[in-house]
Length: 614
Image 1 (spheres, rainbow, N blue to C red):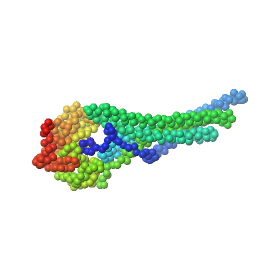
Image 2 (tube, rainbow, N blue to C red):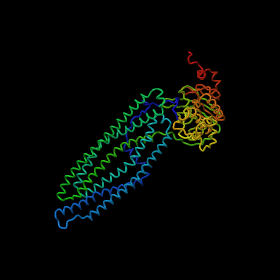
Image 3 (cartoon, helix red, strand yellow):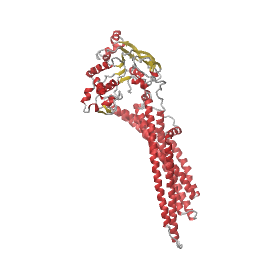
Image 4 (cartoon, rainbow, N blue to C red):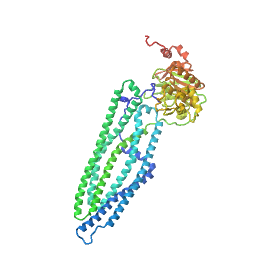
């Protein structure tokens, strides 16, 4: 739906960017809600959890077995050097231990593969559910939401934020599980080797948590700002891309670039601070890890000389010490990722929590037999200020109602209210005596055909674009609609005819040709009530005559609303509504209004006035 000039636009920020206040963050609430998406996959998650435990457990046992192997070789070699009678290295025992070591690594790899395979499925299905929720939300949001929010920011939430969540689920959760299991498993193994050395190693754990906590809190704020600014940047890029012709025509490249640089600088600053602060965690963790490693080496060496611990066990303990700090470091890195993920998830959930269109209390079946339309004491405004107040209009069955007036008079708003794109502040609108709020929006809009001033075509063939107006339309019906809209001739001159593929913006055909296709689409739908919003504004005078003939034929026997700026095209309308500032100030036939010599007469005569006169 395009933003017409009749609609009061919501305030926008500099360069068309949406001005938003940074909302207070709810880390715990967002995290719990994100976990809620994993509940349907809890069986697989449990399997992933046990696979992670087994895979990690086998990996944890490996250093101990390796240490025992070193002890066997060392003790045999040492005894031989000491000249102990019959002393020799027990290669059979060493071989058994090495075979056991190889088996541990093989089983660890198998369970790690199972874990990764299942987690990939869980992550993608979870992201699939989130995308479906977002897509369903897009259909339920009122038009005012799209008016008040940058398209780029909405796309950023649907794409960038969802991708961030998906990547974290697939990579970071399994890593977090492995890290947690590794920490517990290593502590158990270290205690069995030496409680004293374990105590030294464990001192680094609370110290690490104490040190990284302030970094996490500070980086979280900047990660949230980074995601928010990224949405603004995407919004600006999207606007500049879709409106690049206007930007060039008015020579606004410099201003557009300055705005881009400004927002890009904000993104850079937020990203730099977030990465810098979170980047400090690694060197701090490394420092604590190295201090702990040195202390363990010194104390362990003393214990070896006192023969209270074997050389293999001290080697195993040093390996565990390294592995013990590694999951803590990984957890710190995961914490950085989670900051960005929670910020992204919060933006997604804010979007999902937006107020939806008012749900229908009932869904009365609408069968239009006459096509009478009535606006009864309608009040409406886009904000607190009412644009329309106590508006009453009656359209008899089969009448052609023309709506004219200056820019901003409320012409398109009137049509938007009939289509229930916006809800009324007061009064009601009825079709054949049935209030439109008593039926579903889908049922209502199936009975209303519309041709907009701004054409909308999607990437696909011309045939598919025309058939969009009617499900299961036959080729014969599509061609008949194209002929009625005077589009058949130009379509057949194209290299692939009706199979010609339109690009994303349909720029491979002219504006007038795009309009003809949208008219053919409306003709194919064959609705009881037709709405034409400046439908012939983009075609030449000769084509306009053909289209007007097709429109007159199409409007026979059905109620039609025609918004027009070219007053010459609505001379034959049964009733002309003249609007100004949201109110109908005059109505009647073309001749009746000219005789009144009022507002309409001035509008009509202004088309022929000499701009140089007076």
